[in-house]
Length: 79
Image 1 (cartoon, rainbow, N blue to C red):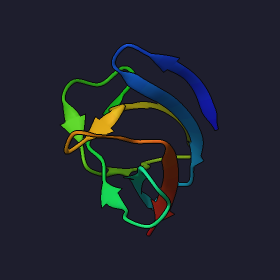
Image 2 (cartoon, one colour):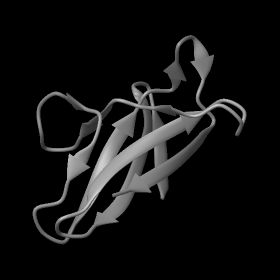
Image 3 (spheres, helix red, strand yellow):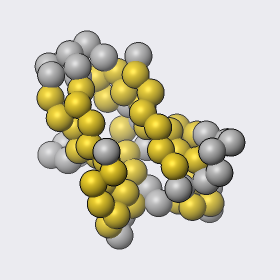
Image 4 (cartoon, rainbow, N blue to C red):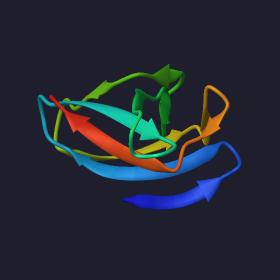
């Protein structure tokens, strides 16, 4: 879910399932998609993906721009 827009970008929330790895992709136009580095609430640093060690809710902040283009659309990839 898109929770809010903040100065640092867009805040997303999703439920993580134990053992699954999650990657956030962004697009300015629904045609070209790229992996987004993101910040996880409560953890230091930026991540390109996150693996759930238990069932839990993730709250992440993704940038509002990627390579100078505004990111308007998001999708969550699960592996």
